Every structure is written in C-alpha cells, then in structure tokens.
Image (tube, rainbow, N blue to C red; front, side, top):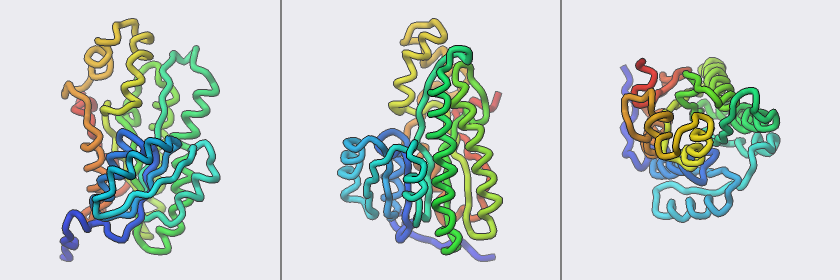
Length: 262
C-alpha cells in the first residue's frame, strides 16, 4: 500500500493556489490564514476592501501568501473568471435574512440564493477546467448545519445550504476521475459577524430578549453550549485540502456540537 506523502505542516500546500470567498472576516479569514500557513498562495475574495487589507497584513509572516480580490459575488461572470487557475476553492461567502416566509422579501431571497448557491456554481465552473488539466483539485464548500436541518424564519439560507450540499456531491462525482475532491464543512453557529448580526433579528422573530437568543434559540439544539470558533472550521478545511484525503469526497464534515445527534 502506498502511504500518503509526509510533508511539514507549513509546506503541505506549497505551490498550490487557493481561492477563498468571504475572506475579509470570520470563517473566510481563518481559512485564508490557515491555508497560507500551509504554504498556499491564497486569493482572498470579498467585497469588503478594508477587511481584506487587514487580512493581508495579518498574513505577512506566513509561509504562503495572501493576495486580495475585491469583488461582489452578485457579479457572477466576474466570480467565474476569478476562480480560473485555482487548485483549491473554498466557497465560504454568506449572507442572512431572518423573516417569516409570508413576510420574506422576494428580492432578499433572490440575493441569498445568488451569493450562496449560484455564485459557488459559477466559481466551481471556473475552477474545474484547470483542476482537471492538472489532475488535482480540492473544492470545499462551507455549508452549515442548516444544510442538513431546517430552522424557522431562514427559508433562503436553508434552501441555499441544502442546494450547496447537493452541488458539492455532483462536483465530487464529476471530479473523481480527474483527481478532484469536493466536500462540505457544515458547522453549527460560529463566532462570526454574520451570527452576531442575527441576534436582534432572532430576538424579534422569536419574541425573546436579545440576551437570551444565544442560549434559548441558537444553541437550543446543540449539546455543546458554546459558539464554534472560526479557527476550528479552518482546521477542517485544511484537513480536506491535505495529503491524506484524496479518497474523502462527496461527503460532509459536520462540526455542530452534537446538534444532528438528536
């Protein structure tokens, strides 16, 4: 049996180019820094230019590099173009609107699906030809426990994440003959600006005080009563991009604190 190559952690992705979306903060920033720490050339993509500048400064002493791409993923043609040449694609960018279905703004539903499902499709479409040509590629889709379970008031987000799980599996089936893997990382609630911005919306939707949203709403179904740290998600992403996972494809790595164990 052939053993996977043994490579120092700071060289595991040396020579690889990684594109990370939603990279200016939260999970995306943690992923960009973790992949650069493994030696990758990272393209950090976000519409938040100041956040990307801060991220690039944080990466200055890492073995790899972090370059920045300022882009709004609703520009789908530009998103597809930005993915060309990437060996690793981390689809992370996300937005959220919390409203009852009968009050959910149609334009908000459209935007969530565009950024969180159609843009990943276009990014994958842009990255795959190069991956196929080189015979190696890693697609990691940051899904969510909401790709596996539903919650009230999050119709667009849940629909997008369920769709992303399916898209990831199709990518795995098509990519396997070309050395390309595709997987989801599906965390519960992570300590990110996206989650922090939800607190007021969730308080209004559930008619509870803001200070009770975290324990009584967000973490009600989780055995682990704390937020997940972005760095924990980034470690899962790095594992899926590493030398020991060429047979890990078409699956979901769940980091939900026991939510789906119920």
